[in-house]
Amino acid sequence: MEYRDFLDLTDDEVSFIVNEIFKPIKIENINRSKAWREIACEITTTWGNGTEEDPYADITDELTL
Image 1 (tube, rainbow, N blue to C red):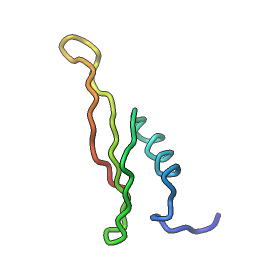
Image 2 (tube, rainbow, N blue to C red; image 1 turned 180 degrees about the vertical axis):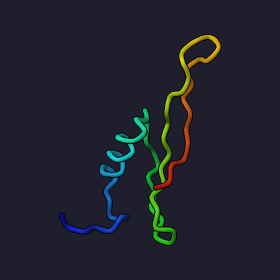
Image 3 (cartoon, one colour; image 1 turned 30 degrees about the horizontal axis):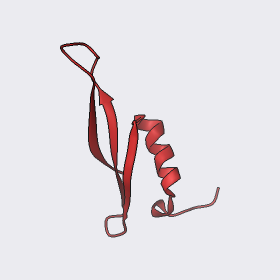
Image 4 (cartoon, rainbow, N blue to C red; image 1 turned 45 degrees about the vertical axis):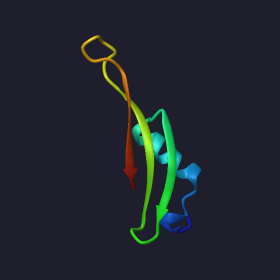
């Protein structure tokens, strides 16, 4: 396995990692910060039980790797 810098991950690779961990319904705005050595994106996930008391809701959060 060849070493690669973290910030060299492609958008597809970042999407794959995020999908494996969080199973979001949408991933948007993948950004890289060289100053902070991090990758950030917006993910949308569905929360709730689907009941009247706890209906499904799509929540968008910023995720930083």
